[in-house]
Image (tube, rainbow, N blue to C red; front, top):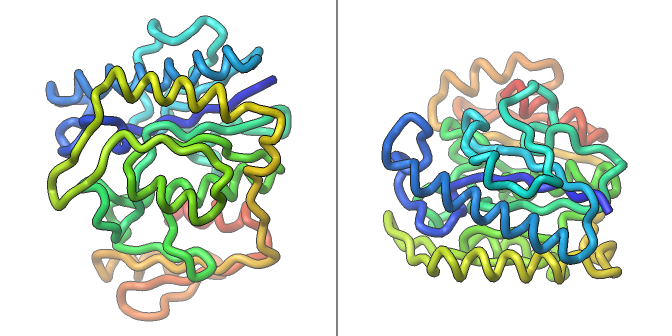
Length: 264
């Protein structure tokens, strides 16, 4: 069984301030260690459930955050960005059986994580087929386009509630809750224990129940914080600027949606 793990940091327990997510700042040292520990726990749970091969994508910022020496030897680690439209799922293909999303976070416009955003701080709000879009939703559809289910998501409480609304069969682990500019966090060791257990349970024979259906058509709406960002993105082929801050793009192929997001 071949498993893909995509890891972010804003949904890791304890992470509250942007300085803690910046590789170049001293405040990021402990968050990077905990990000690594939560990924290790997911790997250990997957191996316990019978995984024979695991690929991990460091999917935060520069993608150079995970401490490679702490990962199990069965893991292949993807660092940096290739520029592929799958972005946080780079190298995912139909040879994988399941996807884990570890350390993910609430969407842009949500009040459930002080670090809530979707792909870029430039985006104030993103709608996909009239549903508020998070990085979870964007990449869950990318996996579904290859008929691969996302079976486990860890992160903040707000994101876990979003996941349950989309498909309650997907295992979730809430390690924190955002209140204004603060977070309420569970103990780091408890977070890793719960992720390890959930990872093992998520790889039971019924993983196909975690699959989400793919719509026949996609309509993406990006509302930017600055009007000039919308002006620029409106020049992408097929995109149109609908007001000074908003750009819309539509396609039947989800890969075209991802290609536009890579540009935008």
